[in-house]
Length: 314
Image 1 (tube, rainbow, N blue to C red):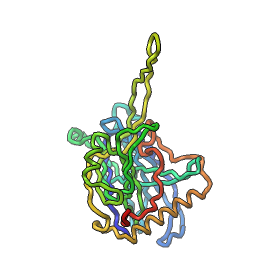
Image 2 (cartoon, one colour):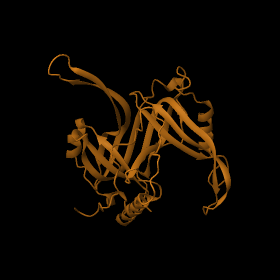
Image 3 (tube, one colour):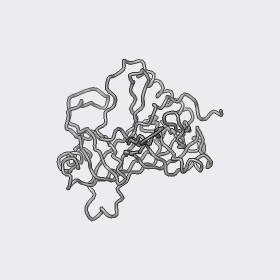
């Protein structure tokens, strides 16, 4: 089985909104057979960092441990969040600052109305803890991610047919039980040149660090008129991306205990999953987000299934 690669997301900020709920789910034995019902908590938190980004983090925890030996500490922690934590939405002057230190990128695939498979990349968390008053000043209210994996694509980013100067980098992070998690990141124009010259390449193993950005930007558009006053209008754009701030190329995958055969099998398994979704009837609803500024993890077009073997020379 493929070993998991690094997939860490850290977030600290003010709790904007909580949408956690107690529900009943199937209780299963070790063989996966349904043997009853049990309680679980699921839902989302939205956290605002100091740059105004609002980041949605998803949670799910059953009440009991997997082996049934006692209460699940994650569940108990989410109960506290659900019942006691104050949000900006409900308490504008008393909202809690929280930190999430065990988040991970996840992947969800669905069929769009156009019949194509879309990939939604979000963040899941386990714990969420209050930042005590004594720790506020020394705790930056920011987001950070650290990921390692295999770069599958490096391309120029474009918007409405025009190149932005940024680079779009897709990396296959390896998750639990060898699951492939495609993560699309953006290398800003300011550091795109050193990124391209330092040794990153498609099929190479690498580490990337960065921050999650989900903000609104208002731009003044001035249309010159042939006579009289210019036509001036304000346009608000949402900037939503996983922004790279640094990284290291780390050579070829086999040097990092990524077995060629196992990786090829994992890619094939993911392709079968995407093909199955594509052949299913399209669903009306897309993955929802409660963020008031949109989904911070949808970046342009969906990541296509990777069909090449990065261990084979091009």
